[in-house]
Length: 297
Image (cartoon, rainbow, N blue to C red; front, side):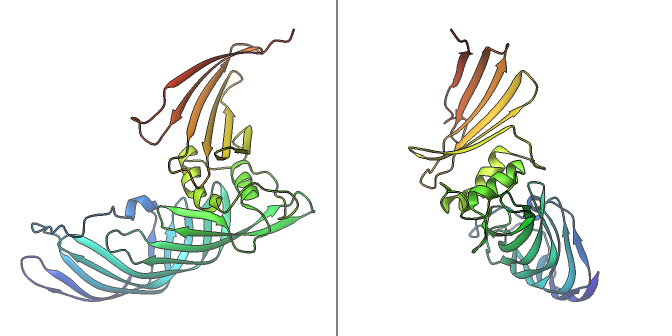
């Protein structure tokens, strides 16, 4: 709903020109549905029959995004232009209030902006500050934690906000397992700030569709000669388990990733199948078969 002051100019390919003041708008699509792919701005679509657009859109509130990631009210001013079939959106939207869902944990918005400034794609830069209260392992009660989400809408970078009371290591463990957190300084962490930039690529890669805490029986983060290693394992049944590991060091252009399936014939004998992944099927390493024996003499 809104107030429209527009006019149509032109004949062969008309242009809709004017101003729109939105009173209410609700978007329920997932982000990858309404974010457009990148295109080559030098390509001219001479045969386009889409109407051109030149619209200034304003909303003081009551713009809602409700999907699996976000439930928030926004306001802002944007300019929508479409010429020769190519859509461009410029401007900024501010988040008034709402929640952000991250791996099953609900965070409250402290502040947030979506900045549309890339003319080659509709994929805004984001800067979200979100917070929640987590269980404290050392002291009784809850600890308030703030996260900073930057990057773009489709490629967010997630990490603890400046001055946070927990480390990046504790944040990752909590998001994946739901375990209690340690206040910063109560334990030594081997993580560097590289984890902040890697969270966005690491978590969606090996946990597609993860919603909820306590999913894995095993979660280990440990140093290796080539960088920190993250390892996960999950039992699908009493005899079958799946595992995943990935290097998360920032100096790895293509972090080594390994997936594995292990079948237990009995308590002492198991067969494990693993494969290394390198980003594309052509670069993947071969499949390894291992027979594991566990006997004491």
